[in-house]
Picture (tube, rainbow, N blue to C red):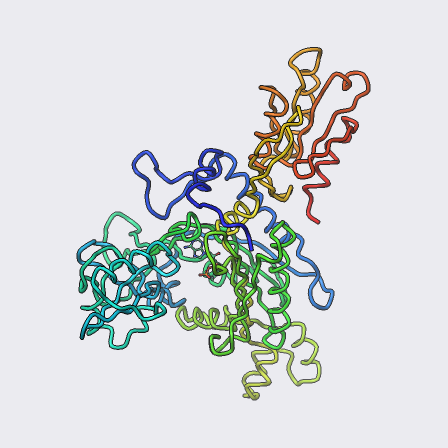
Length: 536
Ligand code: GAP
């Protein structure tokens, strides 16, 4: 289990070092929105680039050793609103929520728990946000004040029988008297806007709540323009927006975030094989980028949790240091033919959203009286015969959150430890143990002193390395202090140009984690760093 981190202290560290800032902070911020600073933007970009390289450009061979065919898309954020009607988001993308008439706060009803207490004849319920230890303590104090005797364990608000008649006895999380919470009602999480100058119902549009639907509605365009054959995948990285009722845990649940999604289209008979391929591949990917296996908890949904069309769904969960329970980083879902069929029904483009196995047809039709599929259909062949050639593919969807993974990488990397300084005295340091591939800055160049030709040699090396990866030049202060500054932002290598460099053409390279220093030739620095930051 990762060491618990004080999240307020951690958020301050992220701000001070330039990883993450509160959005529009000078105006008091805005709940659920975050900005990435100079280091954060590099870190998140490295994460998205690693995903694109490993999943789209160079995915490992498939279950039978075959090459995986993947292409990318970059769709608009605002789409025809019918997309969201067909996908079910207009009708069903909602959470149950309650308002507090007194505090004016809004809560997700399914994320509230209550302590149940009896005071004389009366049963009272003291509500708090699930997993909020302080909130639970406050609820307990209110119960004590009201003279209520508590039963053992908290229960979820939604599990209370006959909620409408029970609510008058519920004390909300931020008030002292019962009866201020409204009945739960559905709240659609999509942000709305209007396209064009007139704000009418007809002009209403939505900011996409996921990138996936852009892929489904472009399925035919991709097939026609690439002539891909099943199985193949379409990937997209981009912003998504959800008007979350309760944004929390730093960037974990935000209202604006980025997703990295794949829709992998395959023959229905092969969907289990591909589901297992993606589930295992995605789980492994996090470990190759430095997330300790112990902190990763892939959770396969039970048969009773699965959608009717699905043979499996796995949530890849991570034990964030702010929670006792693992939390979702990514969902790998078998979505069957649900989405393509939904868009076929809504758009009427049934043919466009199906797949025709031309190769199989060309092969088999040699034995038939006609080589034309359309002609053959006129002979009313049985449906299962037609489905051999023309069918709606099944889809496996690995859907990851770029911001969630960035937060996981930041918390996993964060370490406070003690190291000896130049004089052998032990001093405390914060070190970000990023995987070198993800580290925002790959190496720092230090001239030992600003004289004797050292700055010139250091600048020369800096300029040689800069086109290849992110390098930082630092000539301010003692070398020990410069090391600390780089440790704190997770730079894996520090290169020092000293008096010997001019004589023998060598530099010292210091490893952030082992603290070991070795001398290498100046012309070998690039290869040494590239080796560490290249995909495994
Ligand atoms: N297309 C499927 C889909 O969107 P999801 O489980 O709702 O599935 C996928 O979202 C991933 O997107 C999540 O596993 C998470 O990493 C990220 N995500 C979802 N809501 C988020 C939020 N409010 N803030 C940050 N990341 C979020």
